[in-house]
Image 1 (cartoon, rainbow, N blue to C red):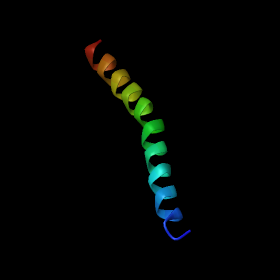
Image 2: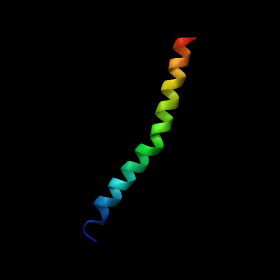
Image 3: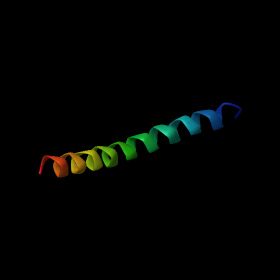
Image 4: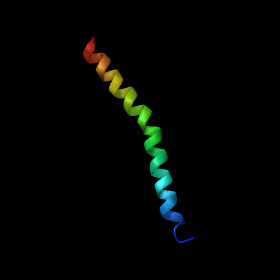
Length: 37
């Protein structure tokens, strides 16, 4: 039970990263297309 919070935080951070990755790529693609046009 002692190592539970740490692993939970790691998993949570990974999940947040995994979820925020497509958003950042989409926004960068949008800005790139805006600059391209």
